[in-house]
Length: 92
Image (cartoon, rainbow, N blue to C red):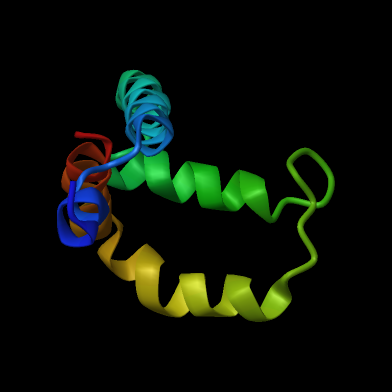
């Protein structure tokens, strides 16, 4: 086998890794779809929980929260739909 032909063939380990990651992403996608996280209300609720110091995750990334509040929250429905399609394509 020539060097060019050997380099074009994917190794079994890389194929197994790609399939495993795809399955993990698709399982997570189905779970998020079932929870309603790809809707405007679901995404907004998740982001509010993420930065809630008392009842949620309590993240201290205030600069990131400001960005999300200014950019993502106003178009949460569009962003959720984009995320729905993008994550599905990544999983496939």
